[in-house]
Image 1 (cartoon, rainbow, N blue to C red):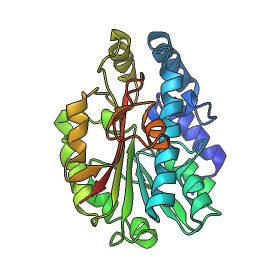
Image 2 (image 1 turned 90 degrees about the vertical axis):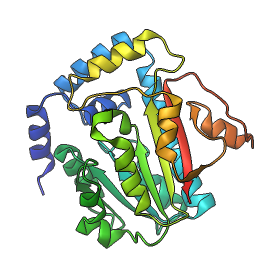
Image 3 (image 1 turned 30 degrees about the horizontal axis):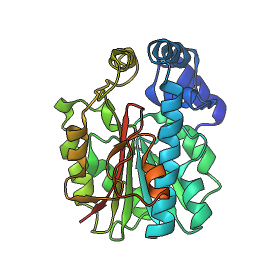
Image 4 (image 1 turned 90 degrees about the horizontal axis):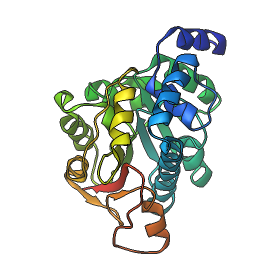
Length: 270
């Protein structure tokens, strides 16, 4: 495993990277000048981006708390996890359930190396390099098999990642392959950028992201909902952030729509 200095040098030599741009918006330290340059361009076009990144992260924590606490899930597979930052899945889950086991998956070797350094003292969490474009590569990875029991309910986390997979990559099929490999009682967690009800700035900001390591595709509510095929949505359903956690706190079964251009939902696999 590379040390921290080697990882940083490798990252600095690359162009802008979506995981590190997101890390910058969250106030993290794992980003480089090229990432900050793109982040500044996005922010000029879309001033809400920091709030959006922060609220998206808060939703992730709330979803993990719900799954580890109320549902009792102990196996978490976080795909497209990006850079380690505040409120990581293992920190949230293991605070409620010390025996929770977490595997982070990312295709960026720098993000994975940073995560491995962070997780080295934790025997119940690890990070692996694999690509969502090849679900079998994830499901059959030795570290995934070692740490997670895929015969038990699993929380499949696809947070702020599917909008980086355009339609020609078949993202619905990719999600279905992963979902179908999990037993009933597993849960799917998704957040996805959208242009629904938003200003043209959101679309313009999506174009800026194309300068990074991944394309960017906004999707409407119907398109995002299709990722939850064969799932029963947990109340309050698929809603714009913020709103999911507020609706749960109030015990409401009707959607509470927010104002940010991100849909969020949790579904129970049938």
